[in-house]
Length: 139
Image (cartoon, rainbow, N blue to C red; front, top):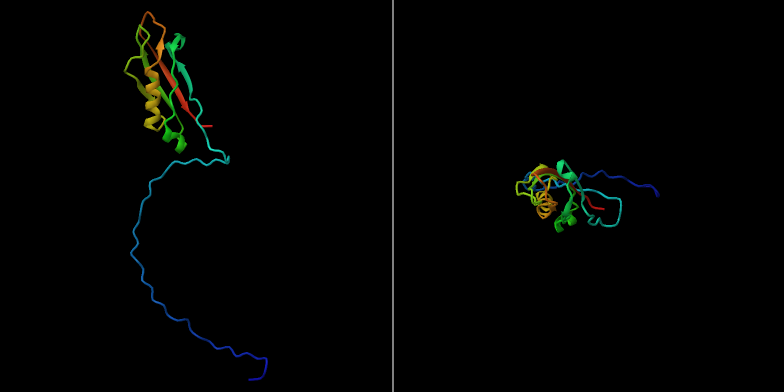
């Protein structure tokens, strides 16, 4: 072979046997996540509360704000719950509270109900109802 010339030799690729383990389909439960462009962690904000219905005109003597559950802060859970409730003539919230709209998280709904049970209204001449809407939102 003359100098400076290279002879190309064709070779075949070696055969490789591979063992493949059986493949099993796995279903992963979906999780609701929210992406934030902010680098700071969201913190609890005081839930926003609104009252409608005949009770909206009645003076509130004692009012308690729902507490954000610790897990909800960690997970970034947010939601809105609407509760229909009745107040007796002595001003106390009766136990027959109805969830009209759930937040999607039973623990947030429960936090709103537990706070509402402690509210006291000014005594009145008749039993009245109201709708309490609580917005759980992190800032």
